[in-house]
Image (cartoon, rainbow, N blue to C red; front, side, top):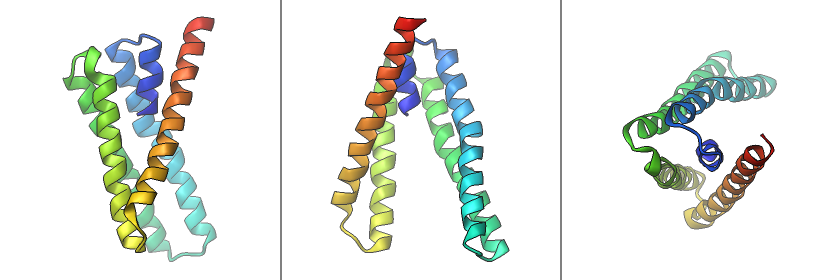
Length: 136
């Protein structure tokens, strides 16, 4: 989601946005999944549990990333950023709600913390996009 904001600030074309989303859906996902896998192994978890967690993590993230690709593919360029922001906030809030319930903590403070971090990430992405556009 932050990637879309940064790219839109740089006046990216639709193919560039979709390409960046696909790169994030695969390459970034692979590195994050590998990090989770190594961490789980370092915790000496059962090998089957580690493998199941690794595969589940990769495909869940791939599915979520693909939903942004689909959104970008279906919508006109002028609406992609706003739609992605709304979709991302809905996904983040929903996932945070379920995790908070599972952890038996109040969902609202958790959601607000995650949304605050999201604002920081999106703002930083936009600033980087503007800076790149100005420099290049």
